[in-house]
Every structure is written in structure tokens, then in C-alpha cells.
Image (tube, rainbow over all chains, first blue to last red; front, top):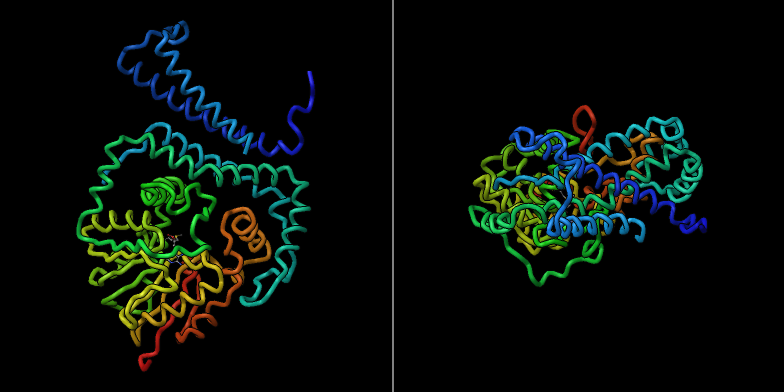
Length: 80
Length: 354
Ligand SMILES: C[S@@+](CC[C@H](N)C(=O)[O-])C[C@H]1O[C@@H](n2cnc3c(N)ncnc32)[C@H](O)[C@@H]1O
């Protein structure tokens, strides 16, 4: 609803957050490329295996922890 | 000491390298490339006083209209703020066994003498030079983090091979053919120490720094090379070493991190430690007197104003020839080396009769 939840003085932090996010996105894309190459080379992955995958509890917990660290990295820039 | 940067660290360093490269292109924007702070800043004479603060205020007002400048500054300040943390994260994801290997690598042919009672000077202690998180000392393995991950991987990646070549050229510029004893001040992780050792293989080298963590990395480097460096935790301005012991007293990229008054004290201490007939060598960044007005603005803005180098400007405007001469050195010359006139090297001699 409300506009201006961020104030004009937050704009630099927003810029920093955007670059921090781009950094994280790159790290992930790099890792994903590495994985896909390794798995394909080993003949492990079927073409649609990633697309249709459903994580179990333990993978969900791991993903959760990594997601939190990612979010904290972005928030650090916003609250600097 | 073999090690491999792991995936996140490797991808992060790739990202930093490319962010730097891509954002550097913005410097070609006419608004930035055309900045000219005026004739008085064109090759300003060392030792003169200029009003840098109003120069930076004025140019910044002009530049704030430039989108290219705003984006360049955003990128550069982000890199300054992030690079130290990224390096520490890269260390944290490396195998735990690395710490034990780094500890073991401290044993060998070189030695390190700590000074647990040393009072660390206020201009140094806790200050994060280059806005590197953790400063020189703020991590158990900061010498490795700085010397390897930041210096070699982050900075060195973009400047492949150049950094070592510049140090070798500086080592060779000493006015002394075969020094038997060399003292290096502010050796950090021992990059210039290695260049000195390569250039003068028969010399006995003593190297000092305030940072215990950096010295530990210099110790590993010395041991790895089978060298017998004597490393010492001490302040360059007050080493406590015996007078007139060294044929060559030198430093690389240290003076620009010193307040002017300390730079003077260090020069006097260098003179005291030099043997009569011995040589002075100070290699560092370019003084403003060697730069065009645009280059002065550029160096001053990115290092002094936003770069976390609080003494850069006073270094760059100090007349080091006068400083060295008033400490007692003679035949003092200050010049840039090689095609890019970098680093700037101050050489001189202590009179043989002293
Ligand atoms: C940029 S680094 C030096 C780089 C190094 N000589 C090389 O070739 O890579 C600056 C070093 O000077 C040290 N330093 C700064 N002030 C000092 C002082 N007063 N006494 C001794 N070391 C000092 C810092 O701790 C840091 O390790």
C-alpha cells in the first residue's frame, strides 16, 4: 500500500544490496554450472531430474540455513 | 604450502574481478574523463599547500550530475566494503586442515620475534586500511587472508605478474651492488622481502612490521623458500635495533600509510640504522608532482576521499627529497621506474664519513 517504505537516504544502501545480491546470484550460478557439468559427465542426471525434484526434510533444513545466510548478506547492506 | 580456494571463494573473486573490470569502463565517460580541477593541481610541487578539500567538494558537485560517476562510485565503494569479508569467508570455507598446515609452516629456516609489550600506535591499531575488513591483524590467519587471498588472488588476478615485477624492479634500483645486510620496514606478508632475497641472494635480511599476523605469513613465505629471514615485530619509527648495521635500509608501499610526522621519524630511524656509506631505498605510490591535474583528482578521490587511505594525500604532497636530506642522506633521487613510472623510488646514501 504505502509508498516510501524506504526513504531517499536508503538509496545508496539499496544500490549496495543490489550488488551484494548480484554477487550471490553469481556464486550460485557458478556452482550450479559446476554441478551440472559434473553430473552430466558422470552420467548421473536425467534431463528433467532437477526440474521435477521435491526436497525432503533434511535437504529442506540445509536449504533453509543457506537461504538465511543469503538473506542476511542482503540485509547487511540495507542496514549498514 | 599448497591450498585451493573453494567454490564460493573462487566465484566471489571472479565476481569482484569482473565487477572491477566492467565498472572501470565507466571512467571513459566524458563527465569523468573530463574532470580537471585546475592548473594549480597540474603536477603540483611537493611540499606546497593546496586546498584539496574545496577542490574535492567542487568536483564532486559537478560529478554528482553524472550517472556514470554515481554508478562507478557505487561499485567501487561496494568492492572496498566487501573485499575483506569475502576473503575471510573464502578462508572459512577452506578445509579445516589448512589452519594446522599454516601453523606448521611457521617452523623452518626463518625466525619471527614477537613484541608482546609493544604499544601499537593509534594511527595504525584497529584502522582498516583500504577499508579491508579485519585490517592487518583482525583474524587469526590475517597474514594468509591478506597476502594470499586479497593480494595474490583478488588484486593480483587483474594485474597478472605485474605486482612481483614492480617489486623486483624496486629491489634492483638500490644504490648498492652487493649488500651484506638488508633491513626492510613494513614487510607485511613478505612480498618485497622475497623480491629483495631474489635480487640479493647473499644478503642477510631482517624485516619488520607492526602486524604479528602479517609477519607470520612472511615467516611462512621465508620458510617455504628455504630463506633465513629474521622477522621482527617492531615500529619502524622506533625499532630498538643497534645503529649503523645495515648496508641497505628499505621499504615498499609503507610511507603512504604513515602520518607525515611519523614518516619523518621513520626516515631518521632509517638513517640511524644505515651503515656509513650504506643506501636508502623507499618505494611507494606516485607523488602528485608526477601527475596531471586530472590524475591528481583521480588518485586523491579514490584513495584519500573514499579509499580508506587516510595519509595518501600528505604522502603524495610531501617533498621526500627534502625529508631524506634533512635526515642526513645525500645523493637523494626520487623517480618513477619503468614504462609506467611506477613505483616511485627514493634512493640515497648515508655519507661514508658519518
Ligand atoms: C601496504 S603494506 C606493505 C606491503 C609490503 N611491503 C609488500 O611489499 O607487499 C603496509 C605495511 O606496513 C605496516 N606498517 C604500517 N605502519 C608501520 C610502522 N609504523 N612500523 C612498521 N610497520 C608498519 C603495516 O602493518 C603493513 O603490513
